[in-house]
Image 1 (tube, one colour):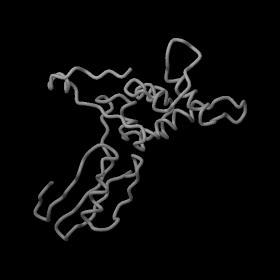
Image 2 (image 1 turned 90 degrees about the vertical axis):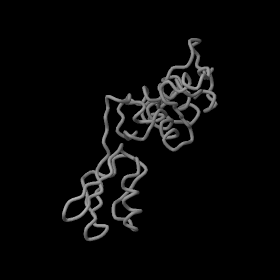
Image 3 (image 1 turned 30 degrees about the horizontal axis):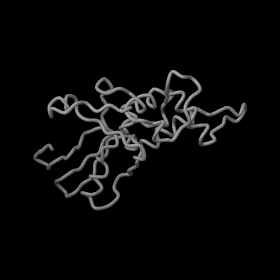
Image 4 (image 1 turned 180 degrees about the vertical axis):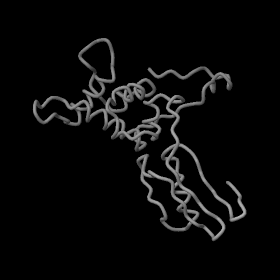
Length: 177
């Protein structure tokens, strides 16, 4: 909040998709700015008057890429899934924290080494019937995006504790089989 002789400015700042535009709409009492479930809807700085002396500002979200891995940014809704060129690392990040094969009820891979992100995507493509147009192979890229959308929609729930949380509470760390 800034106060000047001509009035006050309220400028919320935060990550993309944190609800800054929704708060502005609620304060104004109408749909003054457009909102979306996907991050990146607000593209430029906007100013709206709540009263003649109070201005509300809306701006795009701030992203600090060095503070969070790209896969976590995607799963947190900060980076749009549609702009990912390589979704498999985000699926691997999710699979390292959730038992995806169990949750998605996937058939085990033929290799005895265990599940990789590619194996999970291939099994999901097989289960959902995602095939490429030309060669009719399993469309693993579409499957990876589908899995990430399940997480973004909240149908696969990823909950992370703050660093050092279990050590502070004296609990043993939780391991997922």
